Amino acid sequence: MPSVGPFSLWHGESPLPPWPRADRRRLRRIEVLVIGAGLCGLALARELAARGAEVCVVDAMGPGAGASTRNAGFVLVCHPWDYPALRGRLGPEGARAYLSLARRSHAIVRERYAEACDHVPCGSLALADETDAEERVRLSQAAEMLQADGVPCTLSEDVPEGLEGFGCALSIPEDGGLHPGKLVACLADGLFGVRGRVCALDPDRRTATLEGDVEVAFDRAYVCTNGYASRLLGRTGPTIAPHRAQILALAPTGSPGPAGPVCYATWGYDYFRRRADGTWLVGGRRHLHREAEATDAPGPTAKVQLDLERFAARHLPATRGATVRARWSGTMGFTPDEIPHVAPWPDDAGPVTVVGGFGGHGLGLALAYAEAAAEGRGDPLAPYRNGEGHTRRPAP
Image (tube, rainbow, N blue to C red):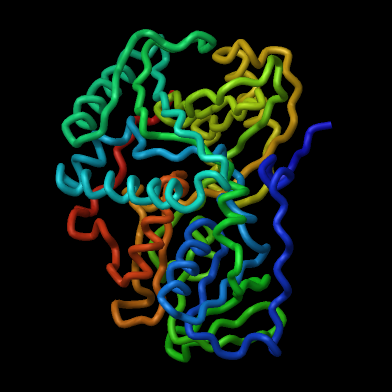
């Protein structure tokens, strides 16, 4: 029987010891409170602790229980379909600043955690459907702009063997994959963390109230709950809308071999990779269920999972007849322009900073944003934002 639920294959392969429950005896005053123990929150806590701060991380479920370990483990320099629109919003200089952030995040992974988190420099493929001429044009535009901005890439009609139904592939060699569960374990190691849901945050009194009436006083606080931020801040914080992402894992059907490239398709809504052990991870299809998937509700759904199976059967012949090992989901966080936020709350003088809105690309950006927040640099892309909304073409 496959594992079905919000928790992923990664959890089973890299289980983390549970954090203790928050209680009044251990928590009264802390210099820095980090709310959210995903990639961003854990990385931020490590950065702050390395600078000498007394830090406590609090999370309702514990380290890496959210989207940080409920993904497919892609580490990307950008989202190719969106790059022309992103460049239009930020300008060429701002787009290059975005790429620098992604590259900094990748560098942190490679320099500190590569071996421990099974980092694979396998490159990525952005694949256009063979029936969608407009999608090919978009990838051609993206390739031209990425090359101009210093990202080596190649657009080719020679789609790798074993992939069906695609007309061209944009290859970005510097991208890669990793084991997100093992990365979370590295980031959580040695941190002071507790489990507990934060029910209220009072910036005037500089206190957080946790379930069980546990009140914590802080000098500074960071909200790193990404797609769950509105649960705590409501409409008073930066807009970070939740969207559910669903994945299934298919058991190996052949012999183990080198991991394949991490792949995106269908205007970036669908994604898949073959791990070295032969397991296939297939995610996406939320564009077919937009209203239902605009949620932070946990757990996979039968309709999306069936569509994922159909996608795999059409495009990945090696998966035909494979058994399902696991099904899971995670909650992503999207800002209106799909560029992450580093924003003070409730105003510029507030003691609370919100960091999030990674738009499904936390593995590619979160560590660099955590570093920027720890250094007090504010929103690294603020000088380039023009406030326009996202312009990705809706997938069919």
